[in-house]
Length: 136
Ligand SMILES: [Zn+2]
Image 1 (cartoon, rainbow, N blue to C red):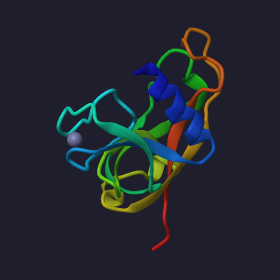
Image 2 (cartoon, helix red, strand yellow):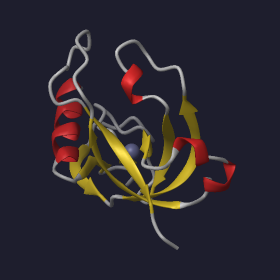
Image 3 (cartoon, rainbow, N blue to C red):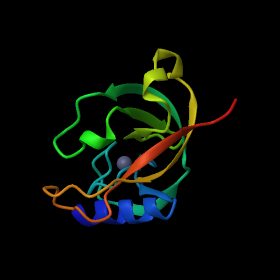
Image 4 (cartoon, rainbow, N blue to C red):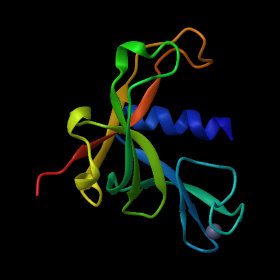
């Protein structure tokens, strides 16, 4: 549901990672969807997830979509949150040094505000999850 996404991003701006917890199977769904992503149940409730995870995949974007030229290069990462769901966001790291060696690293999950892009429907207050590597 789009309301779920709006809520997700608003909470993300406040430093909270929210999703749904399934009352049937116990799985977490994040970002929010209308049903449990594990079992399809609608018996789900909003909850806050831990803002920690593990880097599972990443890629550096050198050729961005129209409107994002100023932001490239940047690294997009797939993170497995400690509560289970995998989410996509940006990695707060030198794109030139983002390589295979980062896979498996622990990250904290925060928020990055992106500058408005005219043709995006939600041009005000565009945000994305931002992953920061934790010191080990
Ligand atoms: Zn479920």
